[in-house]
Length: 372
Image (cartoon, rainbow, N blue to C red; front, top):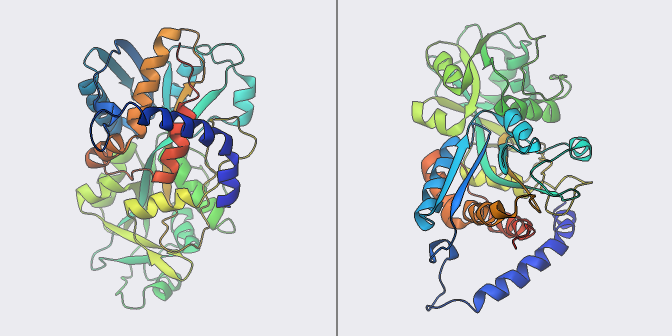
């Protein structure tokens, strides 16, 4: 699987190698200089928008980039993934954030008014966040779940915490005779789409609903809550509750989280395990050069991977109708993908930095942006 992924980006990586070779000749100090800290001649203002999941990370990226480029202003409207994609297509934004990549048929239908006619787009997986299954059951501090049991809890087919399916996975736990109250997002959410994608892929015989950002109407158990904050509050304020949320928020609130079965082990979420499942997953087929949409391998049994993750993308044109925005967008995305930018986002938002392997592929895609 990894071989096909590397083959898919081989040509792009070759371009990146040439670019890196050229950069080496410009290193003016021993050990080289990070180009994000080099003197900048960029100036201007650009606005993007989209996924709210990336908002804190975008704030960190923007602060770091504008510090290195004081004559540049980056604005970001966290209006949601769908709104960001629509605004990018309409030419209102030169870049967008989205919790999913454009579908192939959406790209074929177009248009992308910020781009030159016939230009491709690049889609960069630069934000990786584990999604935690959070719970609040008095007397239970830790919990092991496999995919089928997790699906049953959220589908309403497992209705009590002392259910034999839960007990079999947690022989040392004292499980109470207590009703299960699942909590889900009330709003259209990339977190929901990724969580239901995991349930559908890993436990399709229990969770038969297609992945979607809107929670399916069929399961009647439990309650709906607005946004991540609403889900976290509902779970924290109840007894017998279970929900799903960005892992950083679970850590902030001190909520108990479930370990998920992968192969023969139960894996706790971590930045490293979240990044590992991304590296285990192939790029989607039928995509253009620089379109790095990932087909997450939720059913991987590789050691140490955590399968419930959200991958959010930065989306841009390969060639812009307004050539003046190209160098700013390109420079900003280079900072976003850099080790410095990824570390800044991780410190601020608790997400998982992309791996060095994925960074090489992302940088190769960014290098496709035409700068005059």
